[in-house]
Image 1 (cartoon, rainbow, N blue to C red):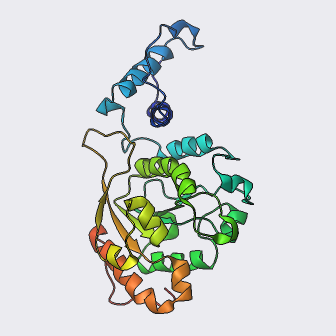
Image 2 (cartoon, one colour):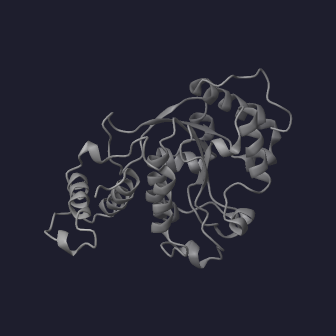
Image 3 (cartoon, one colour):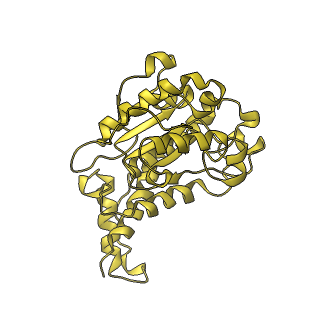
Length: 272
């Protein structure tokens, strides 16, 4: 019996998670005959050994079920994560992320608000409607991109997430990025940009350019380390407060569209 690619992928993702937690290296033990399907054991042990020595063969490929890999990450977080203090500060549920697991474009915001906390989905309130309009102005649908946040639980009063809260969620977000493997990430707002880039610069200095971004703590593949482009623009909630900056945000999105080879209209549709 041979493990199918999806099963191998799920096993590799779980082992990668243990590796990032500092658990390992893993060694082979002669336990094959304890499995209910004896023929599966050598396959499992082979994959385990490849992870232990960081073999490129054991990395994510386009043939794997990325949706299943994302579910592994979500299961690792659990339905009632207690890893940081946000769990005890009034959050209702974890907001994992949503969209196409094979998306070329990924948006990352700051954290869930009240509407997101209630529905368990990112960007579903007024800011979410504006983000949908921004995505539509790029000639895309929300279902064609992937949307996530720096933290997966709502901070009380929608305050800015604190450093320890961001650091606690970061490994899971990095794993999501590695599974999705987008060509471009758009950081929405200063909090997302500063956490992803590890800088403390102003929005004015971070906008208008691409950064080379490689999620830390992930394995490489046969084509080399995974790397994508990262752009910074204003958070939709900020644009609701200061609509004058929508033109500047549109410039950022046009830069992203050109990189992705999307047709760039001369002006954004009304409402974006």
